Length: 348
Image (tube, rainbow, N blue to C red; front, top):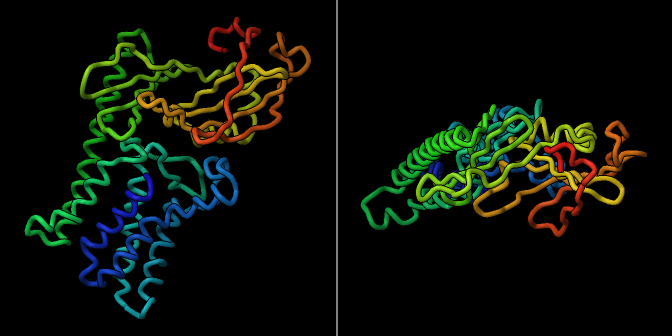
């Protein structure tokens, strides 16, 4: 989740049970800091690279071990500022706000690397979109409801946190309905998936992206829990292109392996031709919204083919460079026909 939601959650926790005993300003500052501390790993995005942040993180701030060790330390430091005392309350607030951050991340499509520093795999269940206005609405209720109703501020924030939990649970139910709807469409279309996943659509909890995996193919469907059904059974049918020699060369690299094994939930490999070989674009359908057309982000690999590679699948293929691109960069995929591989219907 983004940091507005994390900050509002930390403030609500501080107001719900700590402001009266610690002092409002102290509790709010600690709640805001602790609820965002896990995102310290974003420094890798700036100081190293976006690729390092996504695939090779070294700051284990989302790990459970860091949470267990550093959150109490943050509470202790806060209790020493101004020699306030009340160590136990400071530690409890830091643990609650930091833990709430991890909980929200675990129900987002990106998940959280809670096993860091031992494993960089992302863990989570994608129930909430990365930016959810309904979360903001729920957590800002205490800002104005007590002005209209005879409700104490602490109780208003406690109610907001309960409503947030109920909303997350409701989105979990919606996720299950999206999976069931995708399974129904697959059965009608003759698709026999080994796995079906549902990812939240942008901004509205009734819009979902259903992704069914059958072998090397990914079938993506727009799922609207309210309103008319989509005319086409699938918005997109993509392939992992696992048999393509250029894709094999990409997955033989450390970056390719990390993407496939520790990052992607629904990986897709798009292959296009260049004058000297291919460009392979690795994307994850978990971040490709079929409702808005948002492409998410991708890793582009330039792959050179060896002598005879135009027709010989045993020729050497070598990754010469790669780069991270997103919807906010000017880089685009090259265009080619790849006619030499048309004999394999799963490869472009």
